[in-house]
Image (tube, rainbow, N blue to C red; front, side, top):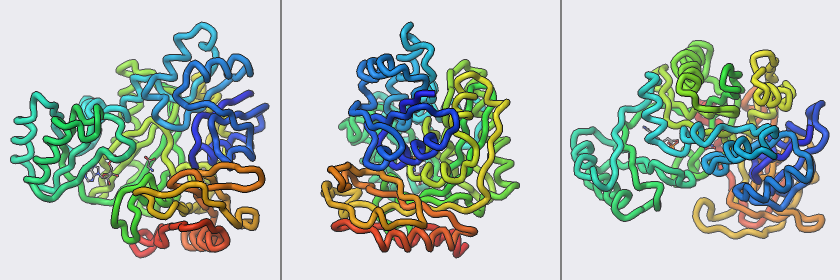
Length: 426
Ligand code: AMP
Ligand code: GLY
């Protein structure tokens, strides 16, 4: 099989690493990729949203399957672009239709979907500029903290959690009237605050059946002890100790099955990953968000725990035979720690030479924001490297990652020293 993988982050490096191990792979291309993906296939200079450019490449290179890493091309309708084109319609696209991608692309769509299918989530209301007065009244009738979410994609920045009622009202006005998050905040979802511990659950589906992937926990804040600004994610672990059989049974029956059934019932075409951002409130799962793709950095621990051939699963998705495929996991723990640029998630510099990569033997180093420069590797983003290790338990996996990190350096590198600590202390 000839595969084109779209994306350029740590998630895509981990997926490329996994695809490269498949017994049915003939050739792997990654667009645009990074200095890490290059080791597993050929990087192609193409933007993930340049559908015409992707089409030309796919036709010229007889690509059989396109695996979509990030949400943007999905929300822009890359699946539908392929199926509507007579020349492309036999190329498999791993990712949902544009309508399915609305689970991530519109918070209001996701909330309405959940309420139609009785999937547990925070109570909410959706407001626009014309219904601002209703939104303000809605806030008056709630208890804080107040959760305000821009409806559309806002690069992970569209969620505000505010303690003070007056400040929440001011923010709501700025989102609706002053386009605080651009068009993404033309509609705002206001929801009840849920207090609990978060985890990420992943399924892959062909629209009929699904397989659960290993669950993971992501560390979103920049600072130790979960303080400071939100980031794309500073580390992840899998498995998640509090996701025991009883909890996962509730996740399956209350969240995953109703979601897959609901998509089918509503004839929403969905052939790809579903990411359930969950919160455990006193032993019960609630959906905080859906994403229409894998998580990053969760993928950097999920792929290493997947024993099965990922292209076999993808083929099952493409041919609607997923139920016949086998999925197996490694029993080991995997932990990843992100090395980021100094200043991230605020302003940061790129182009720093990364040293020590060749000395790492006990970890998998997944590249996130990197660029090959001849034999050198330069930093090329806020999140630079995800250093993943296996262990017989969480402690030993983390110890290996931190030991590997001590051998890698670039100017102003930063990382969290407490990944997994909350779970170990629990
Ligand atoms: P989202 O982009 O929807 O995942 O929201 C970003 C982060 O905000 C989540 O990872 C949670 O930590 C937090 N969050 C979102 N919604 C809620 C909620 N209803 N209650 C508590 N925290 C929330
Ligand atoms: N790690 C969270 C996300 O990928 O959205």
